[in-house]
Image: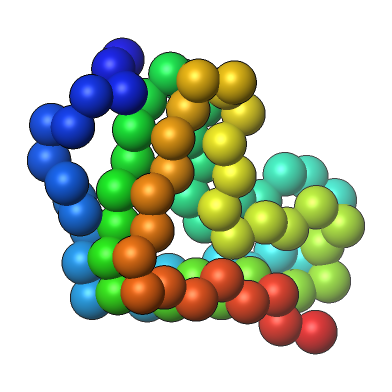
Length: 76
């Protein structure tokens, strides 16, 4: 529960596939507290027939999601 750096670039060189076929919330990465989350060289694919699909989301006003060299794609 801190926005200070603890482990920069905690996830590296990763592909995350998010697939949903329902109407519920679907997230690849969710930062829901006042935290700093850092990634590098990642690809997030979000696809399916669901109505609420998101690759990366922050829901706290003090949350920090830091990405270096990444791709977030909503696949139709």
